Length: 219
Picture 1 (cartoon, one colour):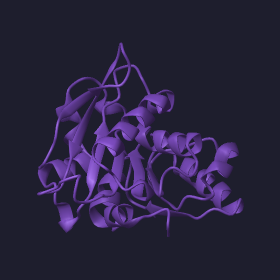
Picture 2 (tube, one colour; picture 1 turned 90 degrees about the vertical axis):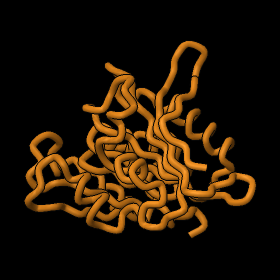
Picture 3 (spheres, helix red, strand yellow; picture 1 turned 120 degrees about the vertical axis):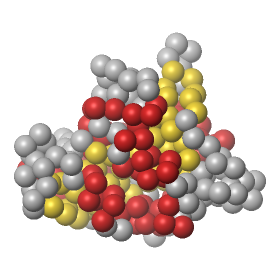
Picture 4 (tube, helix red, strand yellow; picture 1 turned 60 degrees about the vertical axis):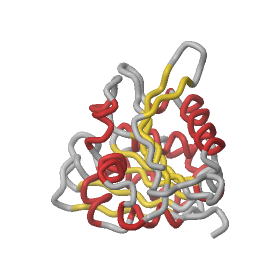
């Protein structure tokens, strides 16, 4: 069973679109797989789900739901026009929990990543639901460093382009430095010659996806 391009109502009056992928032969009655949640950037907002597949996790797993031989479920919601992920945390969690229940996801192996606006959303979700995710990977994003105590118990890998003039690398540096100062476990990888699109090298040239797929709250 391979699923993509489905939608689910998350309140009585609103609908949140998403791209969902499952590996070949998946049966929720027989296996409890990890879940990678991906939050896209501002340019993919709207109601055209094909736009969600332009970058990152949904780009790779929509083309090949068995990407790199991984048995993992991916969930990539679409942010409505005029909204930002930071203001949709409750709706996102409702959707995540619905997928977790429907597909019998391993609750110790739920991870979250995103780029640009989705990088900001990754920090926000991690701060809003501390301890829920097994790992976080914000890319070219930023957050509120004063809330970093909520992130100290979650392993994090952070990526940024050294030449990014849309979201300055200092935003990632500030978060990583504060998280680690408070006893957390965050690493930062800067791609020196990359501008804003640090998500392509992060997802496609590092072991980030494998790391997310293998992360567990049990260690």
